[in-house]
Length: 475
Image (cartoon, rainbow, N blue to C red; front, side, top):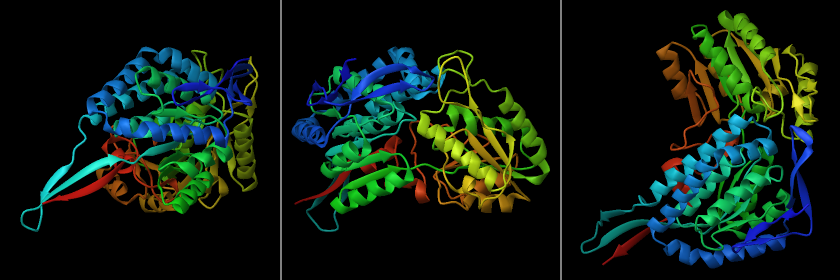
């Protein structure tokens, strides 16, 4: 099998070792062998990015905008092909894969527009005869390290603004899902990005990720809290700018006055679709007493009917988890929940299908409390817990009692409670009568507490990370 190589200085470069990219819906299906990079590969990629940086930073906004627009158009034209590839390597359904590619295209199109809207300020000095100009300049060489759960959308919302604002890139996709990232980089290069502007080095975090952090001017990372802390510490030691998104333990509050169907839909969608492998998934369902029993019964009934199967089957609603390690982690937490005294209303079990894969049915725990590990630690699978509370005040307290603060939702018909929740929940994202997962591409994304570190991602707020503000005084 031919090894799929890295992109360094505009050339595809092979490697001496490789990792098989395995389809989690069918472990007999090997998508390809992808090179495992070395520290030397990263060093060469950073050198290429540095060499390309001055000319790219001086390129006109129209040149950069046109390239990003071409990338967007290519993604849209090929969204079914790329969505199917994404589904094969990550395990989400084909429809979800196509939707993710479409979102990546929208991100590139948004930043194609933002590129020509880069603006500064001219303000009056407090001293006579002096002009003051405030401008934004590229941050330099950006290291981009992305996770496996959104292997084309998350790279898109990091790479697109990096290029829009005149930076060059060294990109490491997750080792479990390199094909989508590699295809994205190929599309960017073919759209006209000069050699060295975007570089791809695949491989492991301890080798490739660390080497990127050790050599770039800024690093943006999405992944686990444990790894994110290491990224922040390493970046701080070098005094480079850093941006980290690191997951959540997101609450969905359901009050007695909620529209019942909306509450059930929000819980099932937010907690279990895309196999629960979303940092915005609602893994804590905080439900008031009056609606609790009816709500649990309805969610359990919906879960029992979910079709869990091969990601490319048109009838599949939930695909497999991404690999054996993630499956083992999910099963471990299901066991932990039982030992802590939680009751399994819907029992998550390993499933057998026509093809060998990492299939797991949903788990819905009841009779839980917020001190349990299953309610404190991110599981990142199709596992959710119901926490019974007396009233709104207790629900808000429990929702905020977490080390995370990414997304939080409430289902209620009370404007009073909705507004109070919006103002007092300790999260970066707040959803009212919506699932906790599901985002727009033109507004800021990020959390609080252990969920995020550094400036926001997406929308115009991306400029805060990808540019450096300069103040010029001119006599």
